[in-house]
Amino acid sequence: MRKINFAIIGFGGIAKTHALGAFDANLRYALPYQLNLTHIVTRRPTNIPLPGVQNVTEIEDVLKDPAVDFIDICTPNDTHLEIVAKAVSYGKPIYCEKPLAANYQDALKMTKLVQEKGILNAVALMYRFMPAVHLLKRELEKKTIGDIIDFKIRIYHKSYLSEKKKGTWRTLANAGKGALLDLGVHLIDLVQFTLGDIQKAVHNERIYFKDRSQVDEITDSVLFLENGIIGHLEVSRVFAERDQTESFEIYGTKGSVKINFIKPYELEMYLFDQDRTLMIKAAEGDEIMQYYVGERGSLGYFQNCHTASLIHFANRVAGINTPKIAADFEDALKCQRIIDNL
Image (cartoon, rainbow, N blue to C red; front, side, top):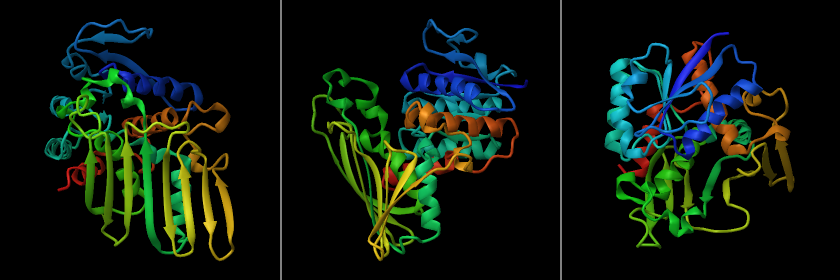
């Protein structure tokens, strides 16, 4: 069987998620190739507990290797531009963890580089692969809930309540922004993927633990779409609750639709004229489930979405005709423009 070989740059938590995605892909899906992790690039020599995976400390070792089909960037935001520039010079396809960069200017440079050289690229804005998101898109296209009045999209995390997060790279100014860039980029991309491009935004950014973070911990935003729709976004890395809030709610003239990301297989729809609530679930065999595991085998929506996103990019590297779902650098650049309020 053909192998699609790739190298991960970095070995933090998200790199391990990407690595697991490759193994998950090979185990669960009848791919016409083996998605094969061959190298992990780290700044210092590291013991990689994965048989057959080589650790190198120089990125050029994988970029110049013709057997490596693409690279997967899993390093801090402010390092992406330099890595992309090197990869482009070698003509390597690039899969990049979100956000594309620490700021819009770097993201624009990266996008121009891959466009000018025709480099295959994608960004891990992987919420796009959630089955409920595709169910939502279908209902919006059918105008089941009529014209859109408003929407609310939110993610609340609690991990940065821990004092241990002080000084980590995501709390530093070099990261670009905090909660808005780290979490909000997913939400902005989802809004643009389902409702339309955002024209402008008004962000209210706050830092509660000023001794711990140089970047926003809480942001609430008003989003103004080009089609006239106005809605609201909220993100936090310091809101603690028993059940983590992650939701997308859209209100229309005929009812509403809601996604709870913790329940990624279903869409809740309320029809005003009938005073009726419908729970719509993704059916087995539906095309949206092609690379998304069923509920019984789920590793959680976060991992499942990453696996699906990685497969879609590997399919393109393999030359397989694949629907345009995965975000590319241009999609991610549009998110950075809104985040940086340009």
